[in-house]
Length: 371
Image (cartoon, rainbow, N blue to C red):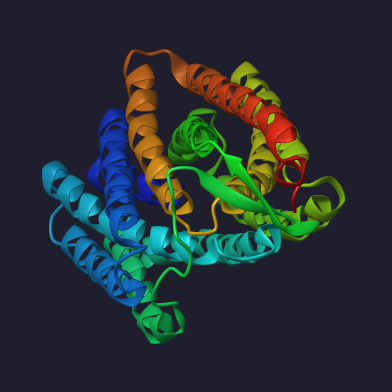
């Protein structure tokens, strides 16, 4: 979650170019994809506590080896290892939560925890970086994984629902009525996750650099990132209320549209006003979109088969996005080109979810507007 600050610290400590930073960020996110994809094959078959233990162990080793050398290739390999571990942990978590009967509330709690942690990270990372440098950040990632071993006994061991070729969901008003939903729809949702996380990967990796390029001082950037995360906590509460009142699909579509507008505003110019606007808008609606993306898949498939793939599609998009953004910057196209790319990615996701919503309205209206 501390990728923007980590990228800035490595740029200052090691003198990496934007293109090299993109490669490192892509290595981390590629590992996230690999870990998630691996987990999706075994999460309904193998004890999930063993899977999570493997993931945490790789997080520890990856971050330990990241402290050993400032060489680009070694850092790319160690970040890839840490990413695999993070992907395993994240995928196991989402698969286990997918069986919830109130997915908007469940994933809002998950995102509340993530946002709270993110706000803490943006507050303490400049302090850690100032005292111990970039290795201090890697050690922080290592140490924060250790307490998680103590909560693994609370994780459900196995999936309790079967997955078939076609996904079956029960209408809320008639538990006996079963509705078949073609699996092309959750696959399209995963494609939308990929498209949206092109935006996330590019924006999140380079927003700190964009602020620096616009001569916005580092303290202002760090403060904006911190308070943006604090502000976004309210989105986790509002998401539950909106889901109960309007379902999950309508707020999701609105949030994606707002993301398009936000990226276009930042593409026009970067100054303190647009920087603050983009940080707060991005942080707030990112929560909305994550909650409702995970909730939509969970309402379709309670086994967690598709939900466990969400981190993988997020990871591969975030692996590709920083490299693509770094390439645009390498060819002197400027940060506005990166933001236009982000706007297009959000627009594609918006179109996909609009189609999925229309199909669900025909097949299973209760699922289409489920909370």
